[in-house]
Length: 335
Image 1: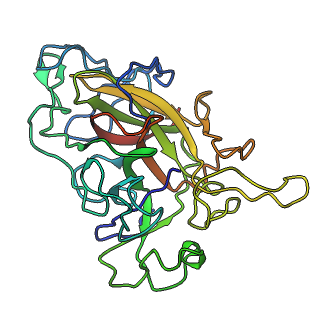
Image 2 (image 1 turned 90 degrees about the vertical axis):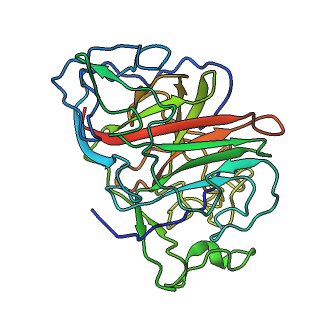
């Protein structure tokens, strides 16, 4: 079960599995761009001079040769550049409920589900990046980030991320409120700024890049999840909005296939301790594919209808070990 609740902050319609064991990531791409200063776009022709002496254990690693498109979020405001807002989610609440309906108070999470998720702008423990002998961004100062931590979350775990576009609720119906669980999502216009996820057309891009860091003493493996029109419960065309876990039933051949939502597309990456690494997740990556925990069969990622980007902690034991990660500067890729 991988379902998110969200809290939107002044929304407007503008157009990871964590583990304490290392993971050999296949998502890093060979490119030639320096990291952005002050949260701005990277320069595809710049050459980064890497250094690891700015308070971090090892070098801050940029992509090489990437062609960057528009910024998704430079963490300079509560809301993303695409018109969405950030939130945390976990297995501790009723799936898709908003405000979140808790089922247990086990474990700890920061920020909590259903609370605001502003960017972090203090310098603190995030190490600086040295470029050409001078401090650049990615030090927790000029370039802000969002940090997510927790411990002992039961069942499948927790995550954080953003809906790329959030629409203001107008009191109209949403599919999940017609399910047996009843009215679990407040769609009233005065519902504390809660946003309704809307599709974003990312077909002009090959994927996206972001910076990540583990703020634990060891590496943390993160699942980067995205929902499209087939996997979202918010107006999707394939899955059953009333189901959020379990296996598909029925038959595709007989036209009776009934599958849960949120069995979405994902790719694993590894956040290193003590220094930032820039990652690329591209639609063409062999490792970027539907999770298939529901046995939904082969799906093709719908780049015209992308709903969210999540960084998720998925567990296979009884509860998550401690985790503390941060991400910065999300940006579309064009190559």
